[in-house]
Image (spheres, rainbow, N blue to C red):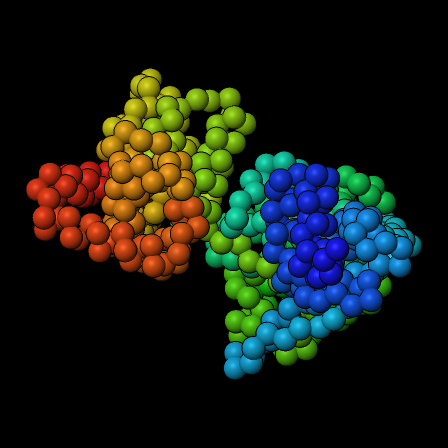
Length: 478
């Protein structure tokens, strides 16, 4: 009988785990794990981050224990080797070792103090002179996890947000900071978290506030000599969602008040959720004490959605509105509006408005005409997916085949031409291009480009095909 090693024990565990979780969960949470060592029935596995460790311990600890016990017997244990990114640029990531829990984590219960808005504490959301109406949480009930489309661009942030929504104040993601450029869904995500917490915890006080409103309220509290009321109001909140914290930059007095409220809530185990247009390390004019607290929990970014995610977003919007558009029109929009979700929504609204007003079906030509300004103003780059589709349409083959392992001559040629144009017309690295073709390496891309260049010089028909495909790419970009 061969000696057990970390690799073969973990591979056997993975076979069992794969039968007990969904394919997406397996790919997201188990494929990135690396077995490190096996000593005295203790298996050490390496995970990419503290977030990963928390998620496994929160959701899969029982499954991990059972599979490990089946492989190593009674007394087996799991330990984690966690990669930690250093905040300084001149040092490499380091690792920390943590033992796995022997039992699933227990829920921690917080005693919530109800906020009595009719008491002597003044509510800054009530406009003086008007009837005292509780503005509730200031959340938009339409912004939920159900209509927040998941993709590679937002998976980490969405997963972290979902964990926080299920256990506010009970995870290590406190504060949770979500950052990205405008229009990528920060506000939608944090409001979805708030709405889910509110739905699951009727007794919790959830409050969403943009920083600009917070700043204005603070100024009013100074003017009305009600500064302590202002602080007391916010210190009663259970879940504090603050949008656009970058607007605190260079506001020293407001930062001090913010710091006071932040510290009070955090020490009581209340959940804090923040958004920003950039990472904490890139915020300027911010008190170092505040910046360090922003980094206490988890910071995750939202990237611009890829083609598949943009397509899913458009399809969801159409389904929600009960409308239908031709597939080629939807794909054209998804290909050409690739900066942010807000522009996607604007483009779709423009198409529907024009179609309704002119009582015309939205054809591809009409879509190109209507979206001319959107496309010109988007300052977009040609995407690899766009090139793949045009090349495959030219040769009338499915796009999936150029990403497959097939070595059929016509498929190989389409794949090589797609790689050639991807290298020539996009700013993507060779590695990125290879990943779009079934995970091939950079040397395959180099070989493909060289083959295409050689054939252009020696094969007249091949050269004509290349020129025609080039024209089609340019025409479709106008």
